[in-house]
Image (cartoon, rainbow, N blue to C red):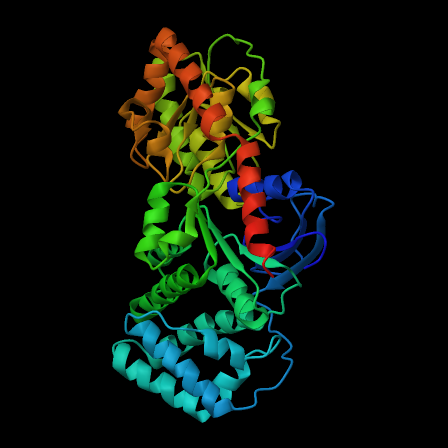
Length: 465
């Protein structure tokens, strides 16, 4: 091992190209551990994306892999029939409800070698695809099944062909393609594989697939099975697994994660920074949502909740605080909704801002997301004595002590409005709740504790290589 520990972080569709909670967490980890060198292996939908973060000086290498780009295959397969037998065995195990062992197959594939041409061109592969279509997809056209099979496996073959940077350990920040790439590095290079999950990758992909109108029948089932199986494989083979909260850890155990290798490490934030906010009361009642203007944050429910409150509290002001350029079409829809509800004068899209300036005068925060893990913005607001009303997503109910006054089902504007109304009408009670929430963050969510735990975990795994 080198004098300085070298950690390869593997990321799919997030840092450093997309802002948000996971990306902010990654930036905090890297910046907070300057004694460790990091290399990034990012898996992206396209090449040449714009960086949204300035990489810290201890990021010594960054390699980006575009899933849509066909790799230039390197190396040579010594026994193609044996490899195809192994691949078909993996496929059969996956689709019969088992969790296949990828060790032998991955060792048969040299780093840098793509199976795509091998599988597409070989007669045995064609026979295998035809057989599976007849067995599992008799209703839909063969062309639909063929292209679904090809697209699913092309991305798997793409990541299995990746030659990752050298490192003492490989830290995947999800299962999926990032986790599979880390697993391949573990098998080929005999280096530790650490897995961290903020949400549950396979569940998030399943939601997306079921909502997609262009995916149907066995195509849908195949994609869901692939993602579920990859997660199970990662859980069963990782040398260490972290979750943000206990409920997610239990779900990891259900899919095969060894209990002894799992640990809960909650989010952490800069206690000193957010505690330093000086409160300045502004006339009126001010409610903010801190987050990207994208569908997963369900800004439209925030807007309809604002309309309900403004009909009762006309001097209220609502702020959508976050970048508007990640989904321009959705942002335009949100603007149109604000206009149609005639609340333009009381609802502001601020764009990217220093959130500390807003925490200084906000009276309440709303979180209307349809999917979250353990939102940092709630913790930030609490340290600045800003209470939060939220949808029941991820670990939020536990964070809010399962207090139904401040919780609502997803898309339930009326129930969210009840929570904001309670905050407005009970200022004295909210003072005590705000103080209690701040103390909770100081006790349980200090970023210093998070960094100490990951430093220990990195050295515990990486120093063995």
